[in-house]
Image (cartoon, rainbow, N blue to C red; front, side):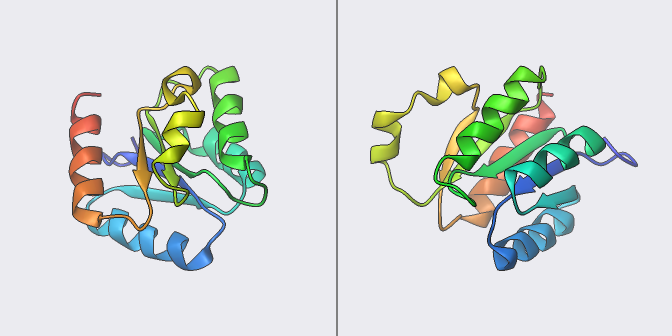
Length: 126
């Protein structure tokens, strides 16, 4: 937490989505930390100690999101992690997200109300 607000780290290589998500999260009362690559995300993670992480599956490389999540696991991450995917439901058949340590997967385009209600519920239990 930072100034009594939950910190959410959001990684995506789409600058428009980063900007929009920052606005959505901050309007909902969160501190939004954004990064446009897995490398930048790791630096931001270490610096901000987020309460929750949202990460795009495919960023600068096809599996950059998955690699990022594995790095967080190796660092002993305890924050819930949600992956964002535009690939579709077939992705769930080829990847075991529970094994990666994910709390869930959101399909793009995001439903902002649903996202915020899930984040609020997850952070309330934290």
